[in-house]
Length: 204
Length: 204
Image 1 (cartoon, rainbow over the protein chains, first blue to last red):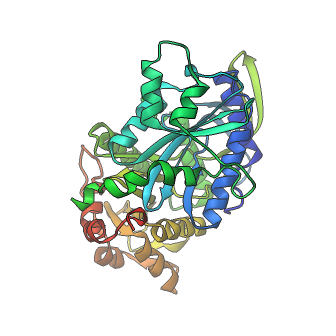
Image 2 (image 1 turned 90 degrees about the vertical axis):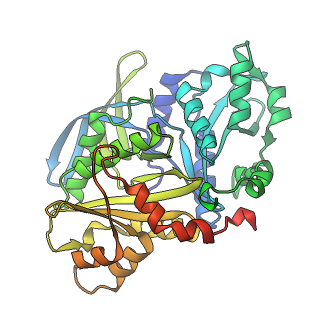
């Protein structure tokens, strides 16, 4: 069971959806790296984080054989949340992953309104919310706090946010084999104060 | 965006998958009630809980028009986690919903191994994990702690767990209009001690 986590179809699905969403973000390599990292984190019992399935609206289903449903007409839906969420150090974490081939800046249109709204709610309600942004041409991947990126996104008049902003406000992620992208170490660094200072509402 | 939360297709999807999984659980009314309750909780900013999309393996996609991807062959996958997770009172919560028409007991086969494994991991890592079980014929819906139901599931020799066990170990959920199923009040009742006694790993 736990091995059938990222069926080829899901990648295909992601690829198709992403391509139709934006043309700067064709690859699924960041997604592959994050899925592999999350699998590693789960096996190490360090965290329990999954990518959500791509929402599909099913219009028609055939039953070629009993108990075997074949979907013959369906369409991709725009998700209402982010792609990844889960449990880490007893806390709820939630993030969106973006990649761009742009060498100098991050195109604002890559971040969608529903992702901003969702991550704002996550932070309002005491969760940890962030973005993982990869500049594929620069071979650099950053973790940035959701609130920080959303503020820059809304305050910047330009259509994109310069790489320098990520260098200043983000944490450059260490990439390797196990995990491929060690973003949880960056979470520890970024939210160390948060761990200590933010009491759970339930503890009040 | 945030309004397209429960497309008809998803319900169909659930229905089809469930039916192929087990024949006691044909309805999606508990699912509908939980989706409506979660939407209400979100609008009230009380919690941020979503049902995960049904995982679908896409085999073939057509492009009748540019940017409009039509899936022409796909199959339902068995999820590796539970159906619902999210953020409540700063904590991670995760649960699976089951319903049965059986009047006297809950058939054990309704709970799948991957759901047991996932909820055990959730609790190991400091999250709140539970089941919501509805006896449709009795018009009763219970919240039961994941650890409790899993223990009963594994210790019971019989093929089902009697309703009396749920009466003794679960919390009977109040059902109404807003929310349709007030399961978060039961979470507060069930995990009040947990709120106080369980420190976050990050606080150590």
